[in-house]
Image (cartoon, rainbow, N blue to C red; front, side, top):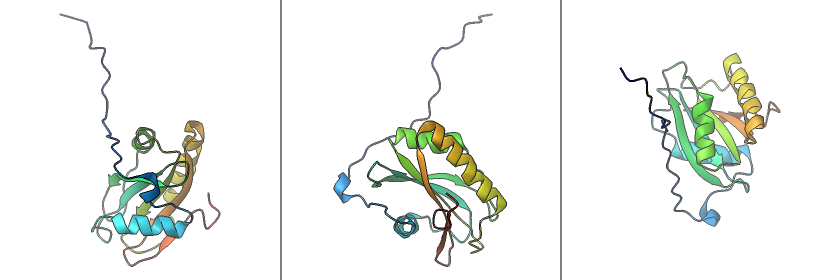
Length: 152
C-alpha cells in the first residue's frame, strides 16, 4: 500500500479574458447605475428563483464582469464567501457589488440578508476588496440598496 499523496492542489478555474477596453465598460457611480447593469444582464428567472450575482469592479469603478454565484429556490439561496472572493481575486476586482433578487417582489432585506452583508464586509476588509453595495432586485422592477440606506 502506498501512502504517497499527490502534491498538486485542486483549482477552480476562472478565466479572465477581457476583450472590452476599459473606456467601453460601464462605470458605476451610483446604486442606480449598478441596478441597470444588473437588471440588463440578469437571467430570465428573476420572478421564479432567487439568484446571487456579483459585479466585479476595477479601481475606477468600471465593470470588469458579472458573476452568477448561486442559484436557489423561490425563498432563498446559499452563498459561499470563498466562491465570491475567489471570483473577485481571479477577476482582479478592487471592489464588488453584491446583488440578489427576491422572486416575491418584496424589497425589504431579511435578517439573513443583513447578516450576510455584514459578514461580506468583514471578509472584504481583510482581503482589501471593498463591498460597495448590496442590491436586492425585484422582478417587478425596482431595487433596495444597502448603501443608499446607510447600511454599508
